[in-house]
Image (tube, rainbow, N blue to C red; front, side):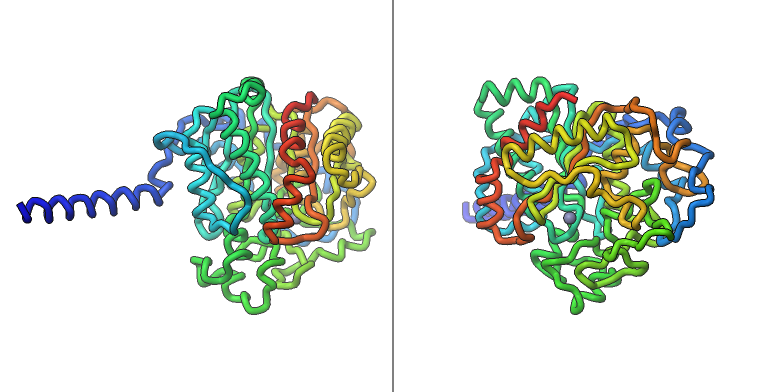
Length: 429
Ligand SMILES: [Zn+2]
């Protein structure tokens, strides 16, 4: 009898260990769906031989263009959805403590157990963490939210995670309004573009796997909770292969934040030796090309200043009009100040942001073989025919930049961010 008990105990322990391991290792849970986001035969529609930058404009180069083969590889990537587990368990998230990225991953995998959710791994970070896209809803009409492209800006991750949890909880409670919302729309959220940066800025050097990384080697000189770039020292929000990314016009004074090498200083942003070089940037490029055609809005969430950036002076009037409408929605709930297209400096060496990229994609810009940047036959497009009718805005939440959870929680509640995100989801472009 004793023997039987001991043997069954051992079996239980082994099963428990297996179960535990399985639970932690999400990579093994992924399924590869055979869909390409763009068929290889159609890829030439996204490339061009032309380049308006061959003109006489005097340009200073910081970064080389993007590797064209890499760009093609991203466009023909296959989707990678995560297998569902068992049943959805209600999450009660109240911003109570700082969560490790692994704990956030547990939340995303639990959300994935809801019928309303599909979870995709859109890429991996420099330090090999999964970058997730959470798709909530069944509707054709999509909205894209992206947060935490800057390492220490963890508030957007928490806002977007909280929002996803609230929506899915209500769906599971059979809330009629939410059911209706998800029948007509699909809310698509990348809560953390820069998961290594999230983990490093909150929990420090010990979270870094790669001992050769720029941040690991320079940790002593970095203000961890103000750090912006990825572990490789590249500001992801300058690394996109846009028309004027990684360069500035020599007639202008370059942006004071622009630097030509990796830097540990708080306000020095380096766009990279070549554009589109970072795995996080590449994940987001994939995600943009996958969803832009069905989306009516792209919302980039940051965390300093309580302002809303909208509009790009070189792009179409219709796009600028739509973007200012979305800015007004945010302003109505939050009172954040609206900063329109006159506040967008172009050609000063601070282009190459994620919103520059998606804005140029919807204006039909193509990747130039010559420059490795998006390109159009006109320098300033006069056409108002958008490939996708979208508003594209950047929301700077929080009065002053902080990682203080009390302040973050108050902002979410007092600025009605839940209502902001839902009203943007319902926006008709
Ligand atoms: Zn930022």
